[in-house]
Image (cartoon, rainbow, N blue to C red; front, side):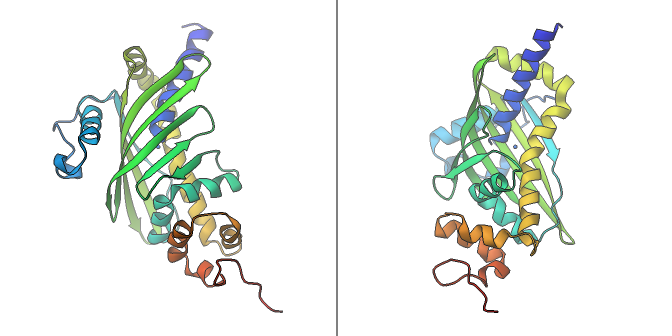
Amino acid sequence: MNHSSQFKCRVLLAAVTALLTLATGASGAPARPWPPLLGSREAFPPDVSAAVERVWIEPTLSRTVNGRAARVPFDVYVAFVDTPEVTAAAARFRKLGSYEIQALDDDRYRGNDGDGARGIAQVLRREPRRLVLLSRGEHTGPILGTISGSALTILDFEPREGVVNPRLTAYVYIDNRVAAALARVLIATFGSLADRRLGEGLRVTAEVAEWAVDRSGGFCEWLAREPLPPARRDRILAALPSCAAGLGPNGTRQIQSP
């Protein structure tokens, strides 16, 4: 494989993993036609059910990644998982990442990674220690143009003695058959690169959550200044009473008298 071909392959792999993260070797189809962890198929709109079935039955590839452990209380970690737009804003402030996420409602988000990938994710199921999302995204680059696909992402969280250990499993369907075939080959060679990209979102979430519980880190001041919808800010404050205690009735940071 010449240098140009290697470069194109790496670009495609980057596009594939970007689609995954907008959800975060290759395997065959799961044994069952519907994910049992989602409950009844009829509980979802027909278009959502059809999208889930396509990804679940005919995945182009799937990966499971153990994410970076976060040394924070479990409710703090979950609060940042439940408000990804707050986590993304804090990450940009801390220069941990360039993701931009907008909450469309409590269960749907629009986002981009600042590097050509964009998409919409929808929460299908919330459990105390699990989150299941369906995402649809695309990546546009100068070499391969636009590659689109869907992903079913399962996030599991295991709290243990003040540490949260996350695990991500993603099933991906790539629309373009040529790109899908090449992706399967690439994953066999560059699987560790895909895993690092998948784990990037979990790493950022952990670092933001750890910043939030570090009382000398300035997170509470940042949160008070950041223009966030009150309901989303309140979700974070509920998990961080030390930040809530320092806010005035209008949500601004109180100035302590000397």
